[in-house]
Image (tube, rainbow, N blue to C red; front, side, top):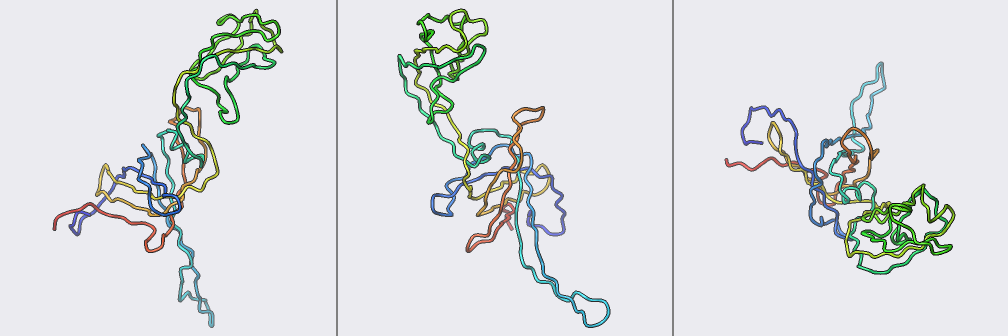
Length: 263
């Protein structure tokens, strides 16, 4: 509020959502992170009441109503599709993977099919395989005939994917391929899906296009996915979320502050 009375505050809402997960074993925020652009953020309050009616004569008349339950909740969408926000959406975790440099790594791709692609360096710990791969040699596993890049295969070096061409002349479908390759020292970010219950706090900072800026603080929330992540389409990709707002011990569920002013 501006500190004046008798004025109206028609508002065209804009603002930023900042989210902090709790430090392990506590309800203390571990630093707030700006989620990026959020086209929508909605809050709702739902109450359940138990009415009482006088029913001794004629039409029953409600003479009392007791609130049994109050639920605070919210929804928001975010179009900042980074790996940390995807970790929120898939209820998992994000991390940075460091790949060390290596030379002369060998691997056999068994029973290849022409026209198909294969991930180099795939394992249970690296299901998306090696990155920044330079294939130094490829050979038919039956008679050690050398394969020719561009004639028998192509390589997406950054992703570590080898594709065997339909018209390959030095290898046929069903044969093994013996690979030798080098790895560059690189790092990349990775998110893995999970089923974690993600709890933390939300700080909403208002920067309204019209109207007074009123900031919101939700001290204990649970964030969960709410709908589809459209990997392809003609609209901007967004991640939709539900927010369950809880009342922590010693605090209320939602706080709303106006901006400071001088009396």
